[in-house]
Structure formats: C-alpha cells, structure tokens
Amino acid sequence: MLLRQTAKENSLGLFSLLCGASLENCLSDAINVPKRELPNSIVRVAAIFNPKLKMIATLLGKDMSTSNQKAKRILGWTPRSAEEAIIATGKSMMKVIKGQMK
Image (cartoon, rainbow, N blue to C red; front, side, top):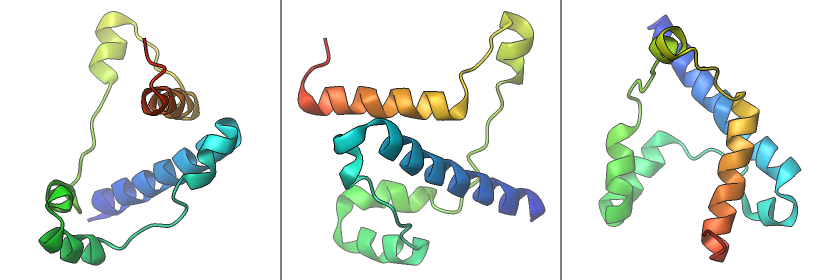
C-alpha cells in the first residue's frame, strides 16, 4: 500500500514538474498546458461517452513503475534529469504540432 501511495505521489509530482517546466521553457506555447488534475472517477465516467478515453481509464490506478538500473549497470548509461527530459519532450511535441519536425 505504501509503495502504491509513493508511486502515486511521484507521478503527481512528475505531472506538476511537467506543467511547471513547460510553462517556464516553452513560453507562449505553454499557456494552454493544463494546470489542474482531473479525478479518476470523472475520467472513468467520461470514458463511457468518449471512446478515446477508454484506454486511459483502464490504466488509472495501476502501478506503472519501471527501473533503469540494468541500463545503468550494463551500458554505463546516465539518464537526463527529469526536468531536462520533460522540457525536451515538450519542445519536440510543439515542433510536431507546428509541422516543423524533419
């Protein structure tokens, strides 16, 4: 139970970091970034009426934790910081949205 609660808190923290990092680094493009969290129950009800939400609804409440220890140990890989990765993802997504991806 404690592990699930910790995972949930980490994912909420990551979501908050995503919103904050995007707002700070994507300038005007980040104005439309959602700043609130939708309760799981509302997403599940909305999934009844919106087929696009069904996949998301099935994943709610599931522990999706993973580890990068093997890649670090075997390959000597060092990951980007969470903030750096989120900023790069946001910028890449904006390029795709704007049709600038080559």
